[in-house]
Image: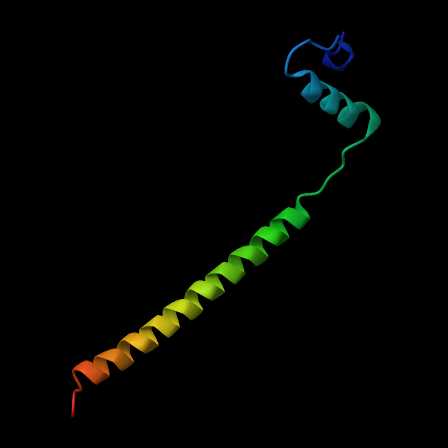
Length: 74
């Protein structure tokens, strides 16, 4: 007797066993992780770009502030 033909248990794993059975016997649920990975990478690049931009603007402001408060006068 294979695990896929065993009776379904009456607990919280029933749904998981049903999905596994459909996946192996009927070829259903053929999802791909590619859209998730691409979305994650794009989101990460956008966040890193924003952090870099905000850091640049902050440093630009900080050095202008320092120049006003204590000019070097070289």
